[in-house]
Image (cartoon, rainbow, N blue to C red; front, side, top):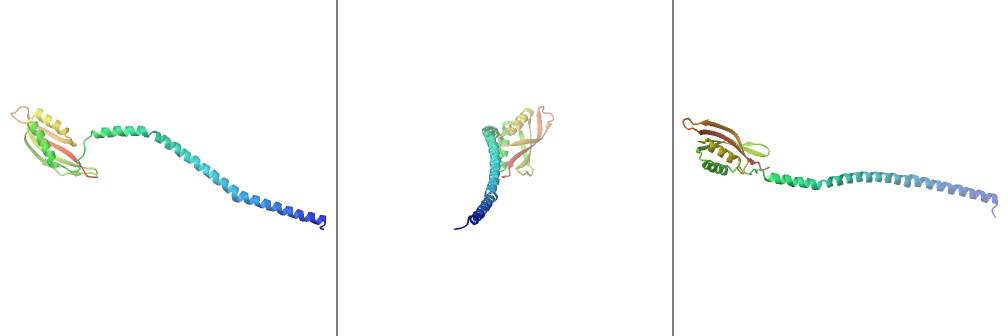
Length: 184
């Protein structure tokens, strides 16, 4: 048999060893498992809060979408009424239409002289100078109809000179710009 004093010492050493092992295991658990997991949890909680804020912001923006779609549709309807730029100059067609308008307005001696087109990033601007004569009212009607053509045109300059001895008759020099797309 083992004396009591010796067995108490053995048990005390075993208790100290078990206590040290428990302390070592507890410290290891805290430093290697609990603390990293808690830091990761806190980081994930921060990410969740950030993403919830983004989601709330996106939901607010998405709530505006129907109103924006209505505005876009209204703008498309408005844009549908604007004149379109053709992709090609269609110079002959423009001259044909202009000649028809001049004949309808009873204008005389219609001639035209195109200038070199000017290119921008989005379109070409083609100036054409017309010379003709006619009654002032007919000239006014012609200019009005020219502006109402389906293609985009702008009056660049208009010079009227009275014809001596013919009241109401004018000689006209009219420079018109018409436009077409660069295709870009």
